[in-house]
Image 1 (cartoon, rainbow, N blue to C red):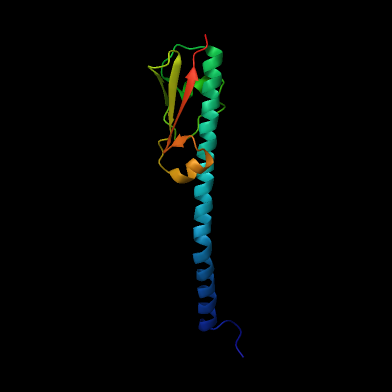
Image 2: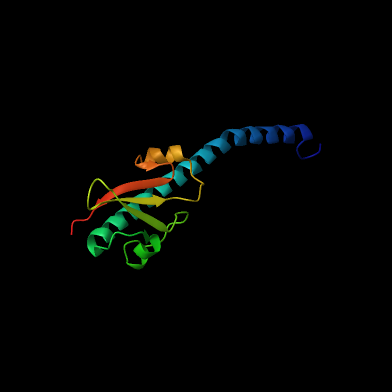
Length: 135
């Protein structure tokens, strides 16, 4: 009697493995998409908090700034990947001393609907919020 597996047994094992992979692959990809959206949402929160701290502490003139400037000033520990370095600051004409701040994620590798589930204030891949000049 010979030892080993027959060709039919090997094909059955391969078919079972292929079926398991067909079920597991979409679940794994969905988990990766959720993790990426969660990471980008957290980076939006961190940049927003860093900007607000910088704005209220440094009392800058209302002008565009950069994420690099926030990091160099010590308000961010690192620059998150995929974000536009420019933070746009525009005045609100109807409200003196109030400014709209826009932060943009430019990498394009995140599902925007999942991103909005994690951070509803984000529109697409852009976060716009208001700050007020108190000084």
